[in-house]
Image (cartoon, rainbow over all chains, first blue to last red; front, side, top):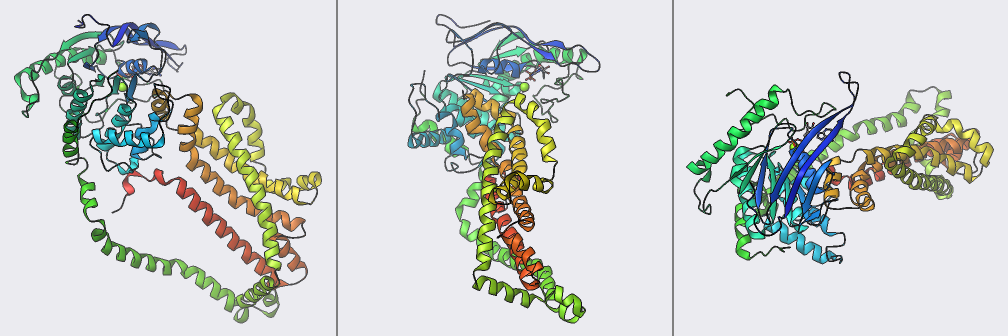
Length: 307
Length: 304
Ligand SMILES: Nc1ncnc2c1ncn2[C@@H]1O[C@H](COP(=O)(O)OP(=O)(O)O)[C@@H](O)[C@H]1O
Ligand SMILES: [Mg+2]
């Protein structure tokens, strides 16, 4: 499944599993454990752009938290550059779906947020250096001139650009993105997808991009990893080869694209139906269903019915 | 590893691609802000003036009633206890001329500022601790509930007995009254920090201390200032009451002493000063609160 040869992979997941204890409820007076992820083994090469799709509740966010070092796996190991992940680190940065910008900071100050501690070389950047860097990365995401805007003065797409700039400013090797474009309208989303590809090519980051949009996964990823419904296992990895896509043509209507798309769709479709049959709606113990997006546009996982 | 090696042409498409759908509206606004805003500015001023007249109407009517009511409507005996406005203002002028009002005002302000200051510092500190350490919260919360629900003025005799009728007891009771709004709002402010922001900060590798300093505190500041504003109002209220009970100076003393010496216009002058002081303090604290909550402006409320 892996095409990494020779050198050590940038990221290596070895039999990673994660369980949650579910609080006791009326139906289940005993607290139970819920297996969110099971036996995930995956290598990601340096500079690779890999997308991860899976039905709602298949443990995508859980996996991202593990990669970010925000939580620890219950089984297995996660290695970055051959070293085990024990916590957040300067080599990885996260972009969240809900932007997670600090509302009391301007765009530039948000971007500079990660730069305020001691840097990787043990040196602290001064105010001017931080401002320069912030300006540079805002420019990179196409937001020159918006340095002094507060988040509430920016549109959703612009906020996500700032969030991406913030992660990039931290100068990580790995960018972890959890459905970053899911809350945006279709047009803004496509625009940001293209820009993300451009930034990826320009910076050579390793990107792990989580989505529940099939189109998005196929469009962005060099490989698409499909997760099974709960407990999340790695169902299959689909290699995507869309040829040279620098042209202006609509890649999404290419025969190759459609073919890949269909492949991922069939893989996911089974899983979504399985998830439904098992009654696994992704609902947290407190009844909150964070990922139940009300609008599902075409290309996103439609639940069953077409069977 | 690879520091981003970016050339100008890698950046250029971003700059040209960005403003199309996403940033289009700002580009329009930036072109000529002055030209676009001028007519709307005039309209805004006119609307403000109209609103101002309407808003001061009730006050003007009230003052008129105060001026004319006692002379034309009230009986002679009531008139003694309810002098018309101009007499009160004259008394106020005399008090200012003789420097008495300034002395009383200074005494009251010193007390309320000291008490208020002590309360704000200690309540914010304790609030941060309680909000951060759950176990401390569980331990202290029942006791805090009891004190919080005991009216400050009910404790005035205790303060007087223990601390005498001097400055200490008055400053203490002001501090007590101002303490709880600040404490509760500090706790609430820290508790309601968006967990996503904490996750984001953690993913950027912030230590506990930095997390507190850079995320939790700034995010709690507007709520804390709401508490401070509430505390400001209640500290004046309690101080005046305390000064009425036992003091040799201060606005509360001025009011009660004038009443007992039958200097009724002086009494009203004192009351008027108290209400103006209250208004001023509230206005200042609201302005401070607003300043610190700028970023909270709702998404939909940007008006061009
Ligand atoms: N902190 C938690 N406590 C208990 N269960 C959780 C927690 N986080 C996630 N889960 C459960 O783990 C499963 C996977 O969740 P998540 O990773 O958020 O899914 P996805 O991002 O793929 O939609 C879900 O069933 C969810 O209810
Ligand atoms: Mg998720």
